[in-house]
Length: 140
Picture 1 (cartoon, rainbow, N blue to C red):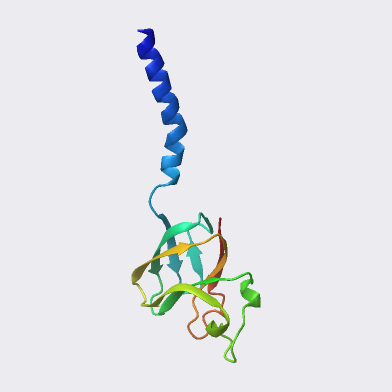
Picture 2 (cartoon, one colour):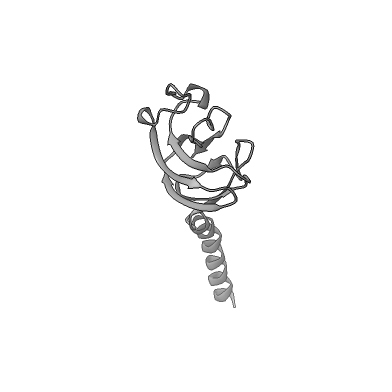
């Protein structure tokens, strides 16, 4: 009986030590993203772990097309380089990935592998960024 109890305790200890590591190595993270009628990007979280992240994007606008552009940068949105039209000059930034042309009422999915750092997610269709359609995220 003692030997069985010892084996059980060893097994239980291993489970307690290994289980958190297995959970941390789970599948990709999922972040819900809403692109709104009033030029906002709402995310279910703005802090995520480095690695594979799936953004489930919903354009809740009734008549506006939006895009979802992920930019790795040390700059705050107010400091992003702009072109003459007031949109972000994408030739001067590092676009990691993007989902273009998300029509009003439609959804899209974008899966990316993000390294630790600071990012800005934005819609850079004409006039959208200037109206506040951007959000900062931190990847740890």
